[in-house]
Image 1 (cartoon, rainbow, N blue to C red):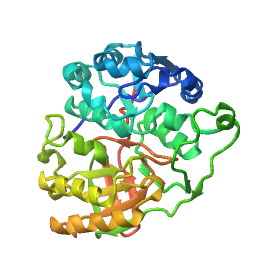
Image 2 (cartoon, helix red, strand yellow):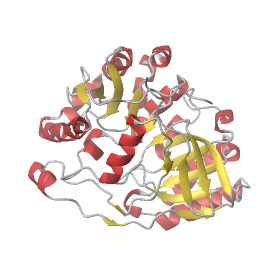
Image 3 (cartoon, one colour):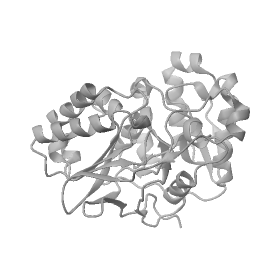
Image 4 (tube, helix red, strand yellow):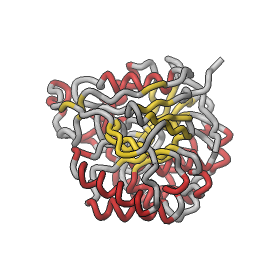
Length: 348
């Protein structure tokens, strides 16, 4: 499925910040962190506007999914808003579904950026025919201790501000998993987290090169959506490069296997041309997950499927961005990953 590419952003553009699941961004003890993350977007030259209900706190937003949906629809409808950033993920943006106007999204293409539970919103955009960006959230990424990692900054900026092909995405040199103490403002602003050496990309199986359009998200969230109208039909996965990653919930290996097997049962694993997997949270179950993935792919006779492991996206820092619908390539010979198109459309 070819998706509409939103226009590239420019310094001075106004973007909305939304809370579509957790209301943490508006909690009094975390407002400093919300502002800290916003300041990083502003340093890129963007003007950040909080959505009307986004900072009204966890209790208010939990009880009013319609208010969260109203914020999203208002951001898409407002011609002054050029992009939409998620403050943070959560676990129940799925409750927004009855309140979404897909025609409105399609008529007003603009960037949506987020990850984890934001997979639901990405598939809303996908259903509307719009590309979106699986990338950093404000509280969990942009508010990183002391400074935004150069790797995250570089790939977010290239995706949003340029129409040039993103090209080869090298592995990050180091990584951190887990969240710092969000209640400790002084330490967050003064003490960098410990980053460990990263192993780089790992070829699990496959030969040659595989090209396809990007689709995917957080594995657990895809499992929630499977069987729903929002979940793309198997035909939409035909010839795609599927990107997957796991959350801080760190599903045990048997649960990981069950979800992958279900994706195979609905035709996804048989349709795709390649797969990339993000670094598991904290590298927990790294070996077990790889073994389970190989097992399930063999069950569906996909031992030929090119699979790259340990890419720097999803629930790890730093991270690159994945534009839904962009043409990507897995090079098995070099264990390399490329995005062959620009994320954004050129803005005249």
